[in-house]
Image (cartoon, one colour):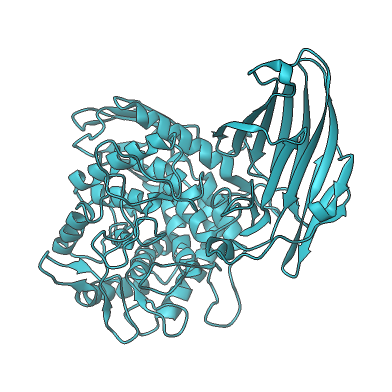
Length: 622
């Protein structure tokens, strides 16, 4: 960890350590391997020759294990035939810069350190951080950021030093780890394609590693957005991931909803009922968007769908007031308008936001009706009026048959660029009886969009690009300007399959599976959207979290889409709509959760589905 680029330990979007360099006997070890050992641990190995008489073989191995919680364990292993006393120096530094400044190359210089207890401390007007060491160093030199030990190694012996990096006043991240209280089912997959098993296993391992307990209510868990830069709660990401992970049970959804309900804004004012969230980049043609809007609209959707998957009536009732406040905010924010506008004055009317709002209105109305609450009729009325207006105002005719606009500018002009945000138009949500909610597009427009998503303009061969390859400003490494984002690719696969466009869905699914192999099935947040060619491999994105919550949960959604599981727990039914073309051959799932009970299902090479295990009394349909 040299302090260059994005290197460092991060907490809450701030780099708390940027440099951690090791010298043993005055020399840097020769690096021989660096790899992800698990979702929350990276392992680095270097070697040293401590004596010229030792020949070409190293006699000391330096192993560094770096954990996502901010711990680094440095271990020296001796293979020498004699005892050794080795000086070990660790040089540390940080700029305490925020992630945005680092990513844009505007981070400042390293800060001066001070000796603090058994380590070093740094401070600036925006925060503080410290590194403590066990055992305590024999020397600490603040001006050089240096900690020093004299370690005695017996023949064949080992000695370790552990560093703990932490912002001042912050407790340790309350990771769930692999405890028996995990809300995630230990599901398994098997089939003709061995990648299916590997991807599901690694996705669940990543989700497990990213689970965090709420500091005030440890029984509630949520997913950290990703490691190493986003090890904290990002409301929209947490809701998206919990929704895609519903086949593993409703426990994660319930905990996430309870945690976010406690953050909901109340009282007077236009933001009352919102789930707060930061702004994020929206690509080269639109201003940054408010993730709080997305989180507020996702809250009632996740509650409604978790209820279909088996969330208990008591838990649903407890969370219903927060969902009602989200839906009240939606109706208030829309007012007499047909569209939900950006919460900031002068912002555009985004296509993606209308898709989120329409889905929230329909699933929210369904939820309110089922729980005996009022307000469902008004939500359905608004959603019904939105559909024809959207089809008229957001559909752009062209020689290729047309496309949805990305947004409408404040002056009414369409923003015509085709991007992956359009996949949200296919993600309409689950209603009762195995039915999906109607979408904003009509049948002809849905077909046109499906063909575009399946074309080389959007399908890179490794997944769905964030922006069409022929669009001005396309950048294969752009966060939302061309890079492949796994979350949006998974939503496209599920939406295309539900709408009957299996060819396009299958192509995207196979592309992600083949890309996953190059990442040891641990899908990153994104990777470059270059066109796949013979013998090529996807290019990693230097700023991508890996593991990350949404991509890990997307692995679950990608694979379970093959079985098309649509439960309706209140009605005691589950409908199956498998991908009939069976693009990966036979595939079977065991240990999923439907209505709180184990659920196992198999899809044959002919696309026929068979349930092998289910809750007693659950009625099956296909």
